[in-house]
Image: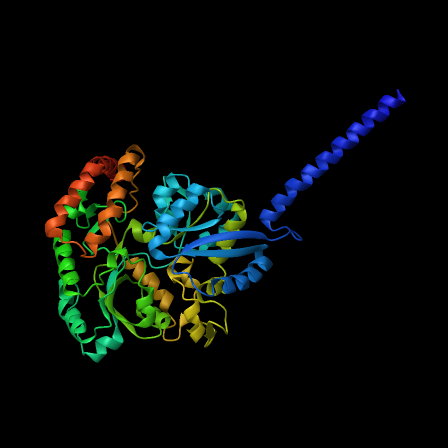
Length: 490
């Protein structure tokens, strides 16, 4: 009997040892993802949009020192240039590339469609557990407006809520030729100014744009940059092919005229970014989305004066509400830690300003508690502020008024809702047709929108290509869903 007892005792001891080891392994992973003391820091990988910057790794080393202390995490940022972002991220997600945080938006790596495809983690529980601070900080309109089928799949940047387009001007050239912008609003109204620059400044691109440019017309797109849209002043909520509208036909005709006159770069339809033009100052005008005091921001970023004038009204759309979102990859190994980081990024001014402006004393200097100015090295870390989190934590530029963020709140409150705000099309029933439509878009859209090809001889052919790909079926499905959404939301 004693031998049996000894044998059982040995088995029980071994079982207890194995249990303790397994328990330790499990708690180690749990501690690693929740920042347990003494554990190695978690390595978070963050993919975001923008021209890759020379000093991004240098800045992330400093960011990691801070985040290691705060949440026991290091951060690696991988930047993908504007024109390549959507395609690159599609490949990364499909291949299972390691990543934790992903920039997404209505127009860049489509937020709604990719949430529905399972690329992003549903965040409701993580928000409740690790994002309580940020939910108190971000305008509720962003968190509510970015829900997909009732759930949050990303953290929107707290910034301007409406989308307003402006014409931006290189003020140095504007002043040099004494050009008046007071009558500028429509695309046609730009012509006299463009002509002056083209005739006098052969090294300057009069009308700067990249392959993502689309002429502004007063419609809201069902899916950004695909030709399905509803007119902003609609009464019947009819989805139309934007290429068949008189407004877009007129705009495309004007764009082709500008292209033929040499106002637009011959490479516009294949250019991924105009960063080289803004860096050199060899541009006269472009179009951009604005925010209160945006001219100050652009001028500080570029190192020379930029001014703007409205090209549209301020409209709150799905694109603007979903204009800048950070999602957590569905394949993230450290989803809890990623949410801790997003919570910190959106509530901690030290971290938010480091990510945005770089290292104090190297890339910028404080001029007093709330204001800063860029140093020459900022050219090596010039980041798109809108894509990096809560803008209302940022230091003010030296020429910004103290009430800048109050101006933002006023701008947000005065925005007008799009008629289809919060309607999110579910394309799952027409996914094959939508893929075919997107393939046609990749072939023709940029060339058409930048004026590179003549709409008089090409537009009907492009419309037919879209219809052959199944656009009319996609539109019919979208219309059915929009009608049901209207009935449900009265």
